[in-house]
Image 1 (cartoon, rainbow over the protein chains, first blue to last red):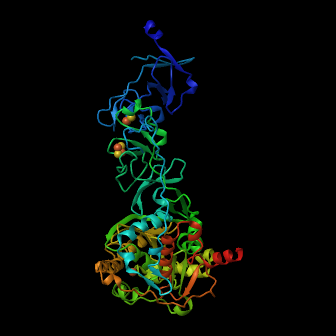
Image 2: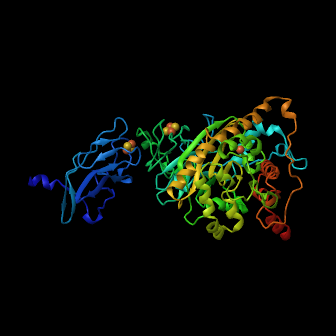
Image 3: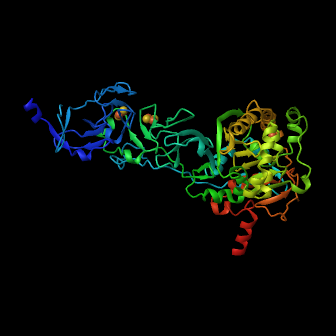
Length: 109
Length: 470
Ligand code: FES
Ligand code: FES
Ligand SMILES: [Fe+2]
């Protein structure tokens, strides 16, 4: 448990996170999307599983991340796809944790 | 673009995807088909394919054209699809609440990006062909297939749906033009706004369209309905007599004070004929309650617009904004005659009411328009067949060499009345129709807006100012 927690990467300050989708680029990682809804934080790849467009240019609507390009909708938390173009995979959500000094997430591959 | 393989000058460069707004030309030989001296219009203008193509370039490529009423697209993302000439456009409310309009054609292979007539809260428009996706601001948001990721020449930011060159509203009515050099909408309408206000500004609350749009197709040249509404009340006595009998139990009536009151006004080819009889048109909708309603508002409307225009609101009257946007005060029907070749139009009709009207009054207007001026309406049916034959007969080679008579009311110009525009006495007159075709000829002849706004159809004050300046 302890060792796992150490694998978590600091993403950003909590104060930077709002109800929009924040794009965060960290050295050695693909760009991330970060948002907060009803006090719960979410971290996911910024790259849309459908055609690589940037999800941070999209928005949150009814508890879903909406891709601004072909309007695939991904449920916050489990990543299930709604209204997606055919073949659109689900969105990965990373385990994350709010700490005093910022938001941390375990960036699995 | 270079088409030779051996030419490499364009290799690796970004394609130029900027919008193209066509330049006007000059067609003096077509302009001559309207003979103002002899008060004649050559029938070729209703038949000839080349003239039709010139109309698309000279008129529909440049004039301010009616798109929509603000009330049809109240919220960001609300949109509708319409035409400017034969060009299909999407009109969409932006996030900052302004309105913009774009050609409904994908810059990739040209496919339509919007298939439905209208909708609410669109997120954007996705092309069906290869999945290019456009925001409601027209910009290309992204593509499909990830293939463009590795193409260095692909510049999303420089690609988008082609916006109209200019877009503007006049008291709720949205117009646009494809000509970046066109003067402002108000300059294009000129003094005719004084007459538009009869319908658009007789109440402080403003106006709205109600009940959706009714569409139909008529096999006629677009200019026949446009000239009919610009100033042909003459036809009502014959064409609409039986319909009027059925609804009113009596004939068409221009009011007891016709000689004193009736007139035609024309500004830049836009025109209105009116009989100032207060309720003649409203009466034909068949609901006495509507007539009472218009009467009950006479004082309030006179306070707002003055005595003359208060009498116009429900009167026997018709109007066209050049080239193809028409309405009937009193009957509250507004319409566009979209050209579909020289011998076909697509007609779209709406009902305009004041927002502040009681709901049951709005409902009566809606039903009244449906029963009179819709594809199944008593009066619309009367008109359509006439325009179809007026068009179709010109397939006859000999027939179309024959002159047409546009000379009713030559010599009835009346400069004594204090009204904006070129005024002719009496509504039973071809004056506005002659000026409509004079405007048509100006559009054929002139390749620039200075000449277009200072020709024979310009309002008298404008001409006077210009002569004083010279
Ligand atoms: S790129 Fe996100 S849905 Fe197509
Ligand atoms: S034609 Fe629109 S994406 Fe190809
Ligand atoms: Fe008519």
